[in-house]
Image 1 (cartoon, rainbow, N blue to C red):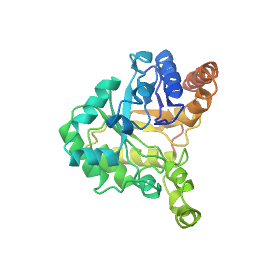
Image 2: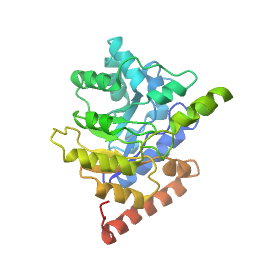
Image 3: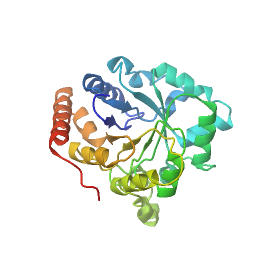
Length: 282
C-alpha cells in the first residue's frame, strides 16, 4: 500500500456489483490502496456471480480480502466445512478473510440469521484452524471497549472499527421492516461508539499490561475525507490505516474519471496534511 487507505467492503449481490468492484479495484491498483470485497456469502454455494468479484488482475500487488459474516463462519464450523473458505479465497486470489461481526444487523433484518455462539469464540476457533490472515470488522455500531480488548488480544491482521457515524447497516435493515418493528427498535439501531472514542480506547488498551497480538487497526465509520483519515492514523498508537466506503462508492457510481479525480485529490490532500499538520492528542 502506498497510502494508509482502505476501501471498505460495501457491495455484495447487487446488480451493479461488477461495475463497482472493478472500478474500485482499478483505482486501488493505480494508486496503491487496499480493498475489502463486499459479502461473498453467495459464492460459498454458487459461482453464478463469481465474475462480479474477480478483480485481482486489476490490483495485482495490493491487499485484497474476501468477506463473510460471522453467522456464515459459525455455520461452516458446525458443518465442518471450513475448507469452503479456503476454496473461496483461492478462486478470488484473495490475501485473506474479513469477518463482519453483525449480530444487531442480523437481529433487525427480516430474514436475518440468529447467531448461536459468542462471536469471539467463533473467531478463536477459526484462528486455531486456519493460517490465512483475518480481519474482524463491525458494520456500523463499532465495538465496545471490552470487545475491542478481546479482539486486540487475538493474532488478527487487523481490527476494523466500522464505527457509529458511517453507514449503519442495522438501521438500513430496520427500514425494511414493518412500521411497528421500526418504532419499537428504532432507538437500539442508533446505539454504538464513534471512531474518536474507539481510537482513544485502543490507545488506552495499548498502555495496559496485556499482550496485544493484532497487527493493526482500520479506522472506519464516519471517516469522510483525508483530513479525518490523517487525524486517526496519526492519533493511533497502534499501526493504523483508515477506511472509507460511501465517498468512493458515490464516484464509482458516476464514472471512472470522476472516481479517479476524487481519489487523486484525496491522496494529494493526505500528502498536504502530512507535510503541514501535527496532531494534538485529546
